[in-house]
Length: 138
Image (cartoon, rainbow, N blue to C red):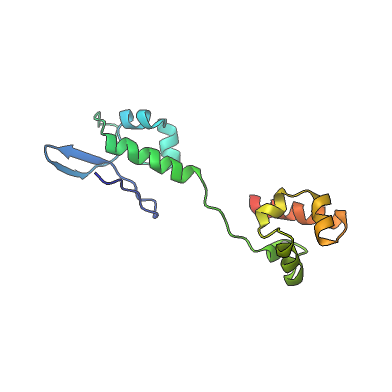
């Protein structure tokens, strides 16, 4: 059986009857429990639940586990260095040349190390780092 996970956030249970299988209304409480999800967590993740179902299929449990991993890890945003307050085109090129090629690396760096690598004041480097952290958190 193929796992059914679409990037459009479509997730559905598979119901089997004999040799046939069909799309179900939702996942059973047993499948949720096996996947390590509570009823409330499933609702928060917009996972359809069928409270009348009591069956448990391994395909559905695998689908729930994979969906939980996909939803739990947010996609990394590719933010340009020029979006950081105080960094223009030339500074972005200098930062990339010094090894700070992403906003993530900029946010994780120490102000003293950044100031020495670029040749700016430590205060300005601290401001860039703070702006990068704000950008990543939004």
